[in-house]
Length: 244
Ligand code: FPP
View 1 (spheres, rainbow, N blue to C red):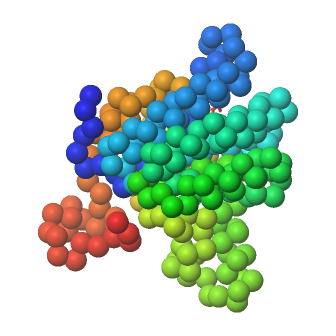
View 2 (cartoon, rainbow, N blue to C red; view 1 turned 180 degrees about the vertical axis):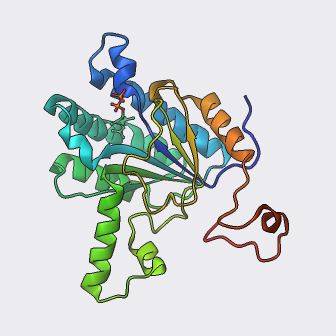
View 3 (cartoon, rainbow, N blue to C red; view 1 turned 135 degrees about the vertical axis):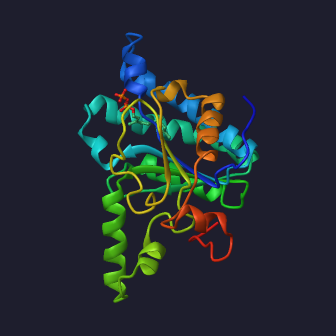
């Protein structure tokens, strides 16, 4: 399938289903996460190619610490390895990496890998790639409020927007979740207020370029009203939204 029109500026993804993908093949769950890295690499490339400007992925949630120790350490290792292997290629593709999440609690190796990836790609602007790792939507709202309180700043929607971990990008237009579940699971609670939601039964390792195009085609057929009526949307005067 070729890339559809009306490409979302910002796509966010809950990459679910790695464990099931592996279990169905009698493989350890970490093998599913490895396959998930392959799918993620292809996804970043395709998003850049079709003109998506921001891609935000949920790679490790604040709640994922509760998984078996072997899986948690496997995911940490995988992130460190993926960063060291993939950054040169991402760099050449004009991808700018941002780490979104709580750095405290991560090992020095992971923290340094993330900092190096951010520094190495800081000059790129073709695609902003936000990796949410040790991240939770509630954590983000709480840290933003705490930051404003520490500065003695009034809490308003605008000041909160500026203090959130994704302040450098507009809100996601399309939020995709693979793996068949239909919930947000503490991802982008603040930023997804007006995102179009797209759920698919495909497991993350199977979510390829054609599947991304399918999700975008579905998105392109929707009417985004941002609280307005269909008639107002049809009349351009006064049509206004928060960001590009
Ligand atoms: C959810 O699938 C997926 C995760 C918790 C990890 C997502 C990670 C990757 C796609 C690869 C790693 C990427 C980096 C950057 C390290 P699940 O394990 O909950 O699957 P299940 O619902 O089938 O058990």
